[in-house]
Image: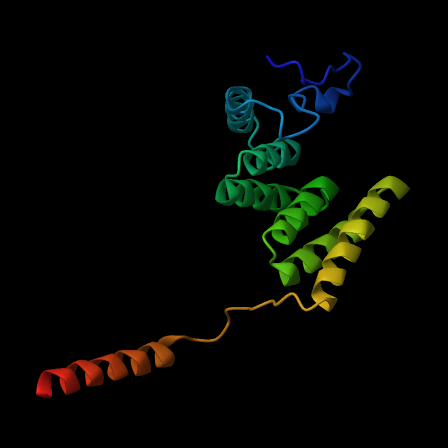
Amino acid sequence: MAADLVKTSGKLPAQLLSIPPVPWRDPHTVSPKDLGIYINTLEQACLDQPQSADLRTCLGMAYAVNYDVYKSMDALEAATRLDPTHFWAQLKYGELQYRLRALVVAERETARAVELAENGWQLSLARRQLQEIRRLNRESTRNITWDKPLMMPALVLSALMLLVVVAMAWQ
């Protein structure tokens, strides 16, 4: 493995022994091969323990480091469904939405993480993320929600295109 791997002690709590340690300090320095091995290990662990929100959260983070957004989103959504009170799953899901600039969703999910924080450190992480999201909202980052039907504009555009084709064929 690479020189940037994190060393772990054998004194982990029993519930965390099944979670593989994160193999990087800086996500930009981990090799794709090591990341692929880590993702495969996590996928297998998720198959072995399908009710573990911790494993799904780690898998979602690994997918995000691998720039696989859809798989990351699926894993983090599964983690929040499995355990709605899981702080890290909620925070990382909000962070993924923030990085995708889906700020409305990111603010809602991060606000839930603030409510789930169990200590001052978690609370400060969630509040800092929420503060950054709200700053982006204030500074004119556009948030377009696609909640309006597009059928009528599509029909009008099609009719106009048909009209142009007929007009060109007429001449």
